[in-house]
Length: 299
Image (cartoon, rainbow, N blue to C red; front, side, top):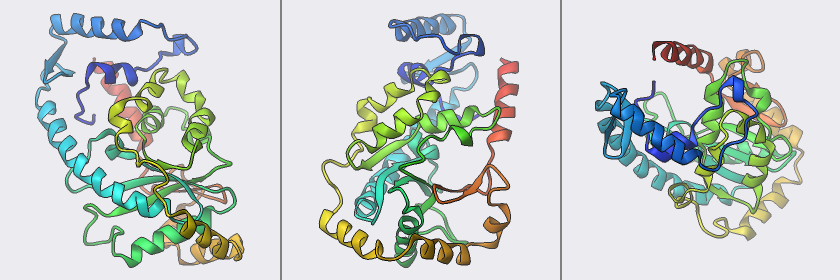
């Protein structure tokens, strides 16, 4: 579906539990079992292998696609790292992660750069207003003319609302893989670990997804130390903190695009409240779930 062939360890990381073994413990030697299963599938010509990437039979061209997108993703992530340093100094921002295709190093050249941001409790509207308007002034937000390499801030959650299970649709494999693909660029100490604990439910579906967060290729992109200028960050928080959060909420709702106002809290893609701000106008999770089910039947 995403033209994304996998290395052996990635097959292990993203391995799903079937419904019949939903609560099963992952065996210590399961990674070796995965490798052996891949060898058997390869011997039976069910899958192919090129440049250490496994792909479905007849889909060797996806290797070229992934390599090209990975190189493009590295360029975008380096650009995002510079921005993450700015975001780390933004008032009430507590963690910054890349999400969607870029989190998997699978971005196309024309794609924008999507962020998932965790904010201080009770200050989600203030944080978003500070971030969005700063980047709008700098001309770095997507517009009608172009989205390439622009920065999209369409998903904020507050520290007291880190469990995303309530966003999950009845049949929603994509949300689990989306979460497993978050690429953390910066966090205040322990924030993302708290996020992972709050979403421990995902281990029922992807028992090995935590292994990816521990991998070197993911952690090499993290900004070391306190990337933000703490003095300026706290100064901004003290100044903005004197203004009621309700005022910032009122201002943002006032200028919010009409389309979002029409859809907010009426569709799973647009969720707007004091703990989560999610603006995914084109939420394709249901369509993806149906496509995925059809692919499984084919195979």
